[in-house]
Length: 309
Image (cartoon, rainbow, N blue to C red; front, side, top):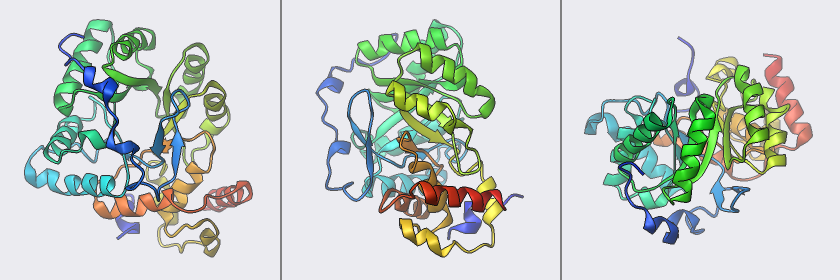
């Protein structure tokens, strides 16, 4: 078994959404989240804290009180510390159901920036999937819906634009999760206007920095980063190793913060979304959203360290 974070860190059926356009959500308040670094969504100027929660795998549990309890604690802690961005998808098993229960039970819908995806072929199927997402998430607004893994992008983006025009979603985008998709993502970014992209990028997976991240900056697209821990390869690589003393130069206190601060130090990145299933992980990860970030020379040193492992 590979070592994990555990070993390293103790329209059609949619609800009318007229209220969306009037909503000044609690996420925009600064008292709770003033300590976290924020970055703006280029297409709107709306500010987001720079660390979010990804729900793939970790939130795919049976939606019972016992199974949900640690996830609920993690989400509560995340929001209390100023986090807002939570990303999910219909294809993540029960994750939308679990997240919907947590947010509705704790009155957190108005405090989060909720993201999901559409990953099916054809307009009718896409609308049906999005309707189910609204129902499962128990919400009248989904802030961002992205085309999942570039599935039927022309049809799905047209559907999402209609929903955005109607005020039923606030932003739209597209996602990938592996390097073999980067060329297709680049082509889509060049021909389409997107609010967000989501891409794989990590200290040991730097391909997106060659063309995708510069293009996102050029085209005014926010960047969410999935698998910022390199699909746990990074944790395996540093198992048993002490954090270098020079990490303190950019206010880094743990290996997870080391990996996240590297990602955040790229100026095009808006928000990495690591999986966080425990409150302790939330607290540690959000430490990466505070203090200094590594400069270019420090990032080069980080790359050299990991490349040598």
